[in-house]
Length: 192
Image 1 (cartoon, helix red, strand yellow):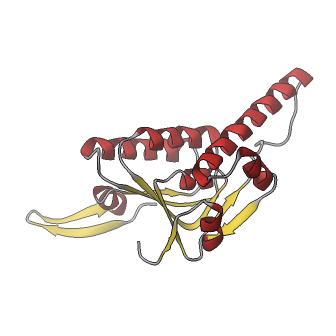
Image 2 (cartoon, rainbow, N blue to C red):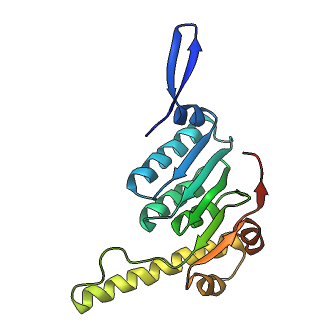
């Protein structure tokens, strides 16, 4: 559900979506589950903002429990490919794939009571079924994804892949100051 603001212009009153006003200010939101629709929208917005001003900063506000890794990695690749600096702001929770996106910011800011949670990729659905060779392929893909995401977190935190794998073996939560100490965030902010 989108909220609107009313703006008076020389042509009368206009309803403007808040998201459009935020986009004009180079602010975008990753709110809710990371899925195909959200990621495609964010990719379009980032690419549009890069075309408008290749050197301008983009602020990406994150409050997400995570979601689909493949879609999240597509967004991560775009974040790293554009010429714009992207500041990520954690407000609430950046968990799982959202934590990886948050950590990938050029500047990473957290509100005081926000949290970041990292863990190994999960298998979705109702459980593993199928032939042994099919299951083996699924497990191999999952382990490959685990190494990719651990490598990304290692790159952005300054830890080794082995240190990241140790932390992601179970759900690891970090409040703002702990996230800074671990290298997941840069600073706590009181204004956004």
